[in-house]
Amino acid sequence: MKILMVLTSHDKLGDTGKKTGFWVEEFAAPYYVLSDAGADITLASPKGGQPPIDPSSTTEDAQTEATKRFDKDQELQNKLASTKKLEDMNASDFDGVFYPGGHGPLWDLANDLKSISLIEAFNEQMKPMAFVCHAPGVLANVEDHKEPLVRRKDVTGFANSEEDAVGLTNVVPFLVEDKMNQLGANYSKGEDWSSYVKVDGKLVTGQNPASSEKAARELLHLLQK
Image (cartoon, rainbow, N blue to C red; front, side, top):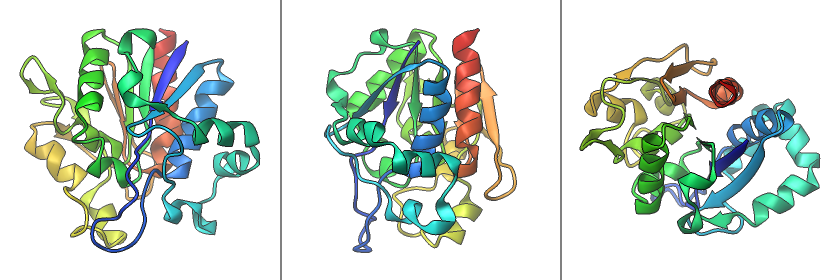
């Protein structure tokens, strides 16, 4: 079982002068769910090398069992420091793909032509795909038979109310909830910050950091079918 995990290379939080990147829990929790089940995981990002970690995801209140395990896991930290270049990845080499969130993907992966074509290839090959928190935003420009991939699909993603709570509504290039609705998806959400995951065919989406483990389990379930 070979899985590709795609991380952002973008570290600037708009014009705020602050840093962003990927959210540690949304990488660590799925990574361990999948690797503990025997998956062979390849990490990739647009620029390759060490992807930027969102500093907000390393604070005390953002820690979970998975992030604590990651903090002690030198082997995984080394692997993360040398992610492969996204342009060298082919969907045909993998059984499924997982995109962790954090705000970074809204800037780079949402518009990255390689990421877009890669997701379209996974979709054409009927392979399971999972996107958590802000990562459903990377589907913004992905098409299936010339219409938005998410159109009429049951999806979730970081809610407007959650973006408002972290004070970044006017900083992000677009709001995930609004974008999904504009594209004609059947967007729904659970309570803010609680685990909420939607599965539609081979597409798995999770609402927020708390949803990352369940999203990975749903991806695993699809892979084991």
